[in-house]
Image (cartoon, rainbow, N blue to C red; front, top):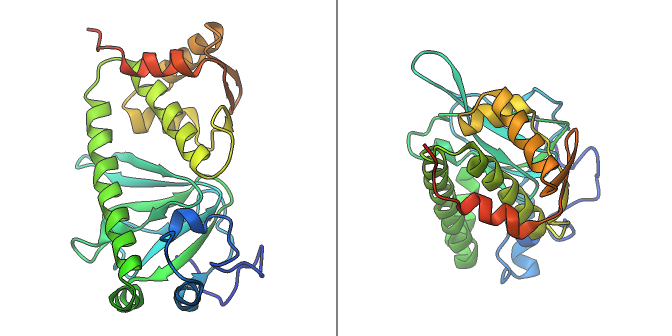
Length: 245
């Protein structure tokens, strides 16, 4: 669990008003005085090292978390005891809402690399949301996005074509990078081939084979975890291709 402190250890001067990700986390219409109120309840913990947990499945739901740097994966356990990756989260995105329904986290959240998160105690967030309608609306939007993401994953896993699944994941990371003001064409994959396969329901061999084929076709340039999308249109067309038997 994140150890709460009054300031960020890696960047102690960071607060909500100065954070470069606040346009993603916060409502655009939130006034500076309201942002300061939100900033007062946020706890910024020590950096989380690769493989460490933000929270475990079964933990009592107390907070939601905004990823400030690094990358986080969420993992659930299947009935036969296998781990299933349920999502990858990048800076500016919110994790922890899986605990809302039952007051207990159904997933574990694990750092894919050295990461930092902002912990937002949910009880205090509820109190503040009642005073700030724009903040409440933003939280409802985040809940809706979480539901949409789950539905999209179900749809993606129902496709038979491995190329579609991997193209869709690359496009998702591209779009999310773009929303953070970063390059949509060039980015680093924080997750391993094994994690990608687990998330997409593919073997690690299939993941490597598809990525290599995209590289040979010059749709992407791949150097270990570094991706350069050379032909965005071709990648989009691939993601939309009808399923093959």
